[in-house]
Image 1 (cartoon, helix red, strand yellow):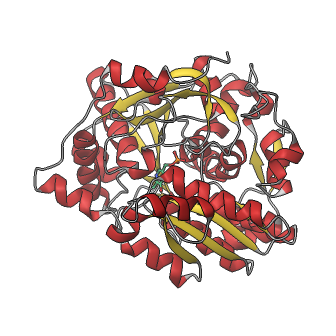
Image 2 (image 1 turned 180 degrees about the vertical axis):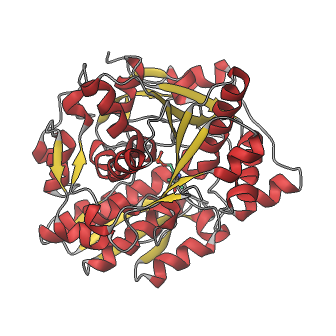
Length: 453
Ligand SMILES: *Cc1c(COP(=O)(O)O)cnc(C)c1O
């Protein structure tokens, strides 16, 4: 009988995260203070984020030790299985070998706790007692709620009003883990109160929720800090636990991927799986293809501009060099909520600019069809975000069939979709539509950006 799951023992869990900046031929351009346009300092960032997290954000060390106290919590669900998608291979009748890393087995159901846990830990070590953050559909808020609980930290989540009302289950996950989850706009902050005064029925936005979370952290510098769940370098760093494990597991399977695939929102699950393999390309002369897959409705990698832009809609994070659609770009209301971010983060953007990675855009009807095929053949109902990686893996497997080649494909299953079944409901009812923004729509928000490079 062939092996289906390649598992690592707990003792084999990697003890270091991998920082790809150390091996990049061209380092990313520095983050800039949005007011002075000068590179941000450690001190400036430390008013918002924990000090250790800021050090990691600016680090060029190749490996960074994972604290024992973090590995202890990781053990709740890590190491995660590497799975051979034998059912999917059979359905596609492909000579390709398809593997996926199953990050859906975490308590929150996605990869996000991989960074939520260390972020909560470094804040706790610094004597911080309360965290703040924002959340859209709730994946990040739920993951940070789980992590904060383990170090006895309070957490205030600002959840965009419309999601708060329409998506109660992740709010209930946050509350079960003991976090306070408030609809944004709220009366807890000046930004929220001002908005409610103008429009008491305001349904909120991610930008406003960020403003509220950062305002609350800045008001209590003695014991409160803010956390972000994607885009920034330290988030990508923490996620490399995925690829560090997968490298070992692929060796156990005696296989080398020809192509490594991840879906792309702000880049954290993609980077988490792909960077340890890309590092092998840089250091050991491998030539693995590394592919990021974004929604065609929010195509910053394939149709955006390389430019300095704000990391968040509200302008609290530094200006980052990124492929962007402009921070005012309003993505259409596609279901893969976690992939609706306007930009890409400085490391991934530099790698794409230098041709070290590839980007593809796919439509949601195609991705959900691939997700349903995956559910039928592998059993797991994938997160709508993850179906983008599955669709790309299916295309690669079909190309291998056409070429009659036994290629090896590895993709990241970033999460399960059990809290997102409404996307499947719409697909099955035939009411899901694809959307492609026009060139002029993209130009309108890109042209608003100040030209810094
Ligand atoms: C948040 C999320 C994403 C997108 O975020 P990245 O930072 O690009 O990884 C993808 N998949 C799932 C399941 C998510 O929850």
